[in-house]
Length: 201
Image 1 (cartoon, rainbow, N blue to C red):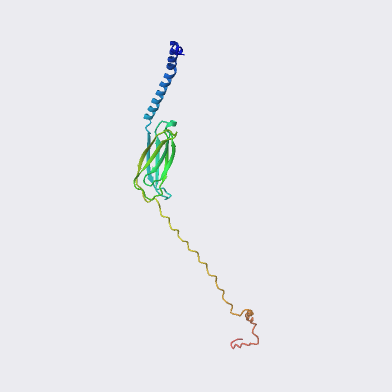
Image 2 (image 1 turned 120 degrees about the vertical axis):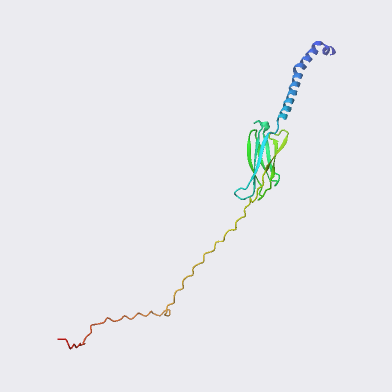
């Protein structure tokens, strides 16, 4: 047995196997580690973001419009999950997954009539689950008088019912016949009247 391992042929075979298998595998592993490290150094969480306030027409309170752009290259490993949170009210909105080169716009409903100037914080993490988190922030201006008072409805007056006219009572008691009016007689020719005329022929 000692003679087998001690022979120069066997030693040369073992060295050749190490040279052909183990050393290349080690080199490949070192290169992969360097690539991962290089990629990690190149990933800078490149983003742009903004926030702005407004009073919507529905009068339900101030809104904060948030805009986020992932300016990393469009690779699966660089897609980000983003949550935008208003530091003043604590209200937030989940903007979902934003791919490299993609922009998303969302709205934080604060329900407040007035906001002081404030900041929105964007929390970032990789969508594919690999380690690493980051955050960004954007400021916004103050806004006020965003909730309009509910108008009191005007009461419509109920129309007055017109009184029913009272009938004039009949001058005669009920059940008595109404008298028939007397008709004047027609005048007849005058008879037996003699007119004397002294100057007549």
